Image 1: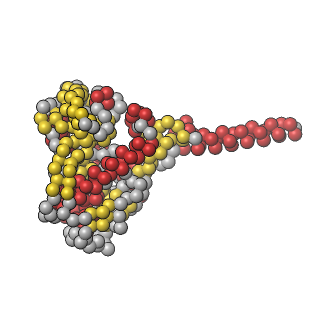
Image 2: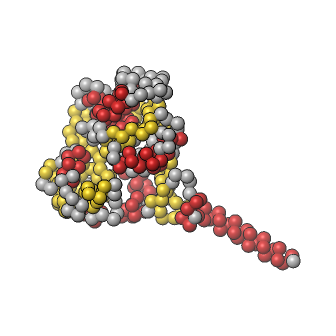
Image 3: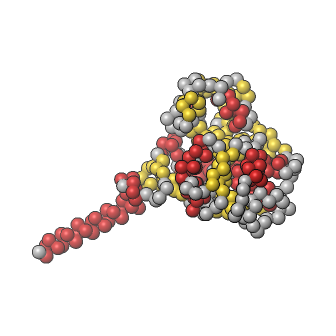
Length: 334
């Protein structure tokens, strides 16, 4: 009996150690985990700005971390609202976590500049901004584009037509049908490269063509006043819309009406709101912060947000200018 008890104790200890190792040892893939939406007050400083004490603009983010081996084996152990993302998608070409963080920091810096330019132009400031093209920030691994495009490529021509903004690139893609080929000219470092991509069907509408990439505005910008944005270690391009809203709010326009407004979406220089990733987690994060409204890019992003919004009011927007109009006309009882 004593021997059996000893063996059972050893087996029990081995089980505990195994479970501990499975819980803490990371696997190759990643998890997107919801993070609670946070106010931009105190994180955005605008020269001459007068922050209002009522309401507020909130940004949404998500945690990205390596999935643990136990979470890989047992999906029910993953955090609520999380999504497994393969290493091939998030870190193509064996990109390291440090390289990914550096890329996210560069994306954030561009997002801050473009958002500041869009907001100040809307307010009548003289902003010097030269669009240089459309920069590739992410590529789906299962499309033709993944073979010929690289993250940070700047698209200059699409089908022989110059493209300087994301809207111009989308206009060229919308002329095509799924399966059509599209010739692109891209700037890659100091070189110019011509590549051919094959379009695929939009997951939300199989009659529409997409290339399978996420994009952002590349531009040279000079601002007439100082705008300082600091979110710490948060990176990526998707906070452009809330940045621009907060800048307008600080410079005198009461766009919140005393409500708490969360927003997500990258911006192009013309004010176009560009679709982003991680909508499920960001919607859950906005809901957990108990905000009153959630502004998201229209169409696919908005449809996904509605699936996880519960009672949260989702407002689809195509442009920054439309976002301001919708906030001005929305029935607010906050």
